[in-house]
Length: 310
Ligand SMILES: Nc1nc2c(ncn2[C@@H]2O[C@H](COP(=O)(O)OP(=O)(O)O)[C@@H](O)[C@H]2O)c(=O)[nH]1
Ligand SMILES: [Mg+2]
Image (tube, rainbow, N blue to C red; front, side, top):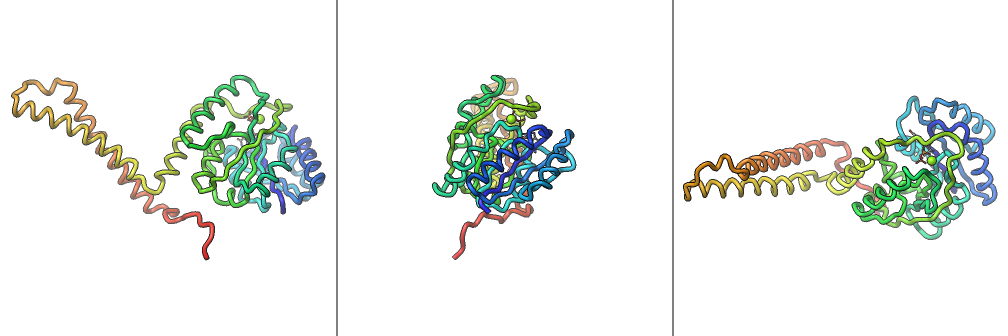
């Protein structure tokens, strides 16, 4: 099969038939073999009934229905598990992404050898409350991850099937799939300017919470990617620096007290700072040991992504 489309959705009943017909038009025009996998994430507006209707009219439609709302990352992750195409394309269900982009995305993966191609909504049709924070977020993410994409969280993306079978998305981490893919060893990541439309039906599902959870998830991903299998290297280094700093301060105060007979070292700021630093440093060390113990008993402690064995 050429293409698997993965479409996670939450309350998008009005958009689905139009989206489906548009995708089918593009697929037939280029003569692709395909499947459309809708993941209904506990919608309450009858989206599932629409998917059932689409399915009964078109056998290339697949649907997965969650019992409750788990979030977009969960939808993508389950969708990825169900794919069997060579190229996986994800898109939003709200008609903001255009299916006309699919052939070119497919070609970039197939012929140009990209692992992942991320859409870039260069001209965006969204309220300003959305576009400005997004610019900042993309800037920070690209600085922290070293992956320079203009639009990390575009819903429209294409993957080689290898990629989606080797990454795991959970929580709210769909925002950082390119970073996750990079950490998994898929470094050939490209970008394509894509058409974007204003939302036609329904309302946006992502509110203010994304400003809180987004950055936290980025920290988690960076941490897991780098130190997930060796937490002591992170906590141990910081802990050592801090506790040695504290010991140096206390040592210096002790020398003053013992050899220069300074009185009243206990009301000097350096005294309290020294004690604090020793305590915090030791705690970080302990966190490192606990991390090592946990990762030692984790089931994936020795799982590595292997491309080939000869
Ligand atoms: N599976 C799943 N999909 C969601 C959820 N929230 C939003 N989506 C889908 O993610 C896509 C983008 O959401 P949207 O609200 O348009 O975000 P915006 O384009 O950033 O304003 C749409 O296809 C939504 O249906 C959710 O909780 N679960
Ligand atoms: Mg949208």
